[in-house]
Amino acid sequence: MAEPAVPSAADAIVICDACPVLCRIRPGKTGACDRYGNVDGRLTRTDPVVLTAQAADAKNLVPFLKDKEWDGSLVGAAPMFITGIGSGTTYPDYKPAPFIVASAHDGVDMVTVVTEGIFSYCGIKVKIDTDRYVGPEQAAVRCEGEQIGHVTTAEYGSQMLALGGVRHLTGGSKKEGTVTCEAMLSLCNKQPVELTVDGGAALTLLAGRPPVINGALEQRMRVGCGSATIGMFAKQWVGHADEVIVVDDHITGVLTEHQAGRFLDMAAAGIRVRGRRSTPGRYFQVAEPGTGWGGTDVTDPLTIIERIDPKIARPGLRLLMVSTTGEDAAFFVLDDALQPVAHEMPAPLQTVVERIGENCEPALASVLFMAGAGGSLRAGVTENPVRLTRSVKDALTRVTSGGAPVYVWPGGGITYMVDVTLLPENAFGYVPTPALVAPLEFTLRLADYRELGGHMDQVRRLDDVTRAMASVRLESAAGNPWPLAPRR
Image (cartoon, rainbow, N blue to C red):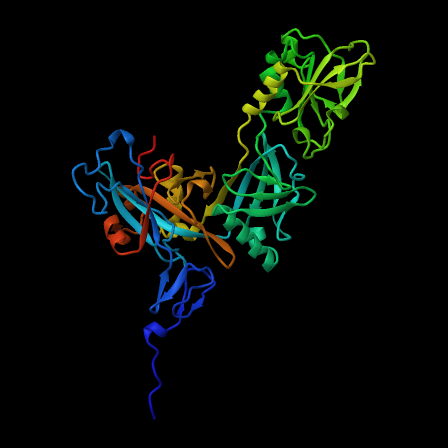
């Protein structure tokens, strides 16, 4: 009887252990995340590792091969930094980080520990520069009908969203987790995502680009609240208007009542706006939130005027009403019955309205990825993970993500945030558990790494690593501090 044929290595199915899904991958195929494949019977990371080159200092540039032809090779190669992008993970957690790389900077021996973290505990904070109403605080934010986050507290001139998090990734239905993961991955990789807010707006968001709200592209972030706008431009209005009302969803400003108007000796105008008076010239709740003037639902600014006092107001009184971005403005003159009548905007007032717009910064959607580097990831750096946490807190270890600087939160653990626009393209991945995969690097002095109890037997020279793997080299993003440079 013939012996059964033994499959060759090239025909064998490999089991990927890079995440808990444990995909069975046939020859020439990739796993569910498209990050690992079966290449000739071996589990292989399909994307190249990304190296970043230190941006050249223009003061130290030298002529390039002035009298010779260039053969295409690197000349005077810039210092390189190995990022976690394409490196692989520490899963199943007992393994050291994929790359523990030694290099030198200004004569100091350094170590960079490189990995791709699998983050079930991660989220995104989105800052939307607009006064437009996107929805009530705590309202559900949805993608494809699934809740993936909520509206959180607004900041000065910006609406804020909190997206993702372990509850949406793992605590709901399978579809909720999948949609949450896909939306987060797209936002982190600088791709557009369409969202809706319960009781609010439809949004199209793309990191580093103006937001689209209910189909309209936003252009301006407000110059300030109504009160701040009064303070900034009060002196420029004196002599050209007898009253200025700056319409704002949060704090509407009234010039002659405001301290700025009083210091400029402006006479009271007798025009009272709706809402709750806070301090002189500052009013709350003059209208409902919306997509009209100053983030309110107002389309006719005269509707916020509660009354005009005939004992104070006078015919011919000049009234300017303007929004906090200058996009909406109107000029009125009181008639003999003390009713505001629309007039053409005088040139001096038009100049100030345009100046309000000039002082508004461009509206952007900013996306910050936030995650916690947990115990298993830290174990890839040292056998005693708490020492890494202490080293980060003591500023002995620098944390970066794809070579980009991060903010590490105070308190326990290594909870960090990073602006996704500072990372190379497609720096983030996913696993279908579901969870996001993000690059992470820990850089410290070699002596400190030894003291940390690091995996010293896994340390390799940068040149040896780059020769043995597929890699792509990019210049470090402009403005990013060089990860190997000492802290200043």
